[in-house]
Image (cartoon, rainbow, N blue to C red; front, side, top):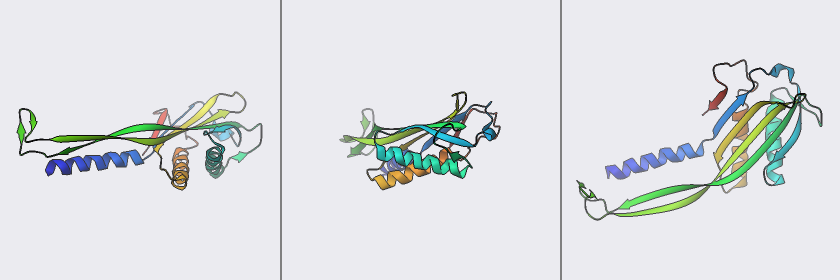
Length: 183
């Protein structure tokens, strides 16, 4: 019984880890982010126009909250966003008939193991900001998160992930590491 509870506890912790987004940001330490006041979209691609529009709205909301103004062309920064979905395989093994103790062949008694494979959709979003004049990459945010089968939940996950991505934007002279992680 202790083994079953231990296994269930580990599975629960792994499940919580899967639900959280993995957010990473990186930026050009030489860029003067205070000089960027406007931005223009270069491209937003997510495989279909519904999600491309949602990504644009989420990024627009965050940049607007940071005091940036969107212009149709010629912004101080260019913005691209690429969203992709992949399938991650999750394996779950259930042991039935645990015996009375450890023997040299493994568990005591007869043990049956059943392993199931589940395909879990995982979304990855990359948002890149480029200097409008030099066309050089100045900031990148990446989010990876397990998706739901419900579009409304995924829209909330997208909004949360983009908000987390832009929490430390613009960077404020951090020089200890070129990569920031949250969560």
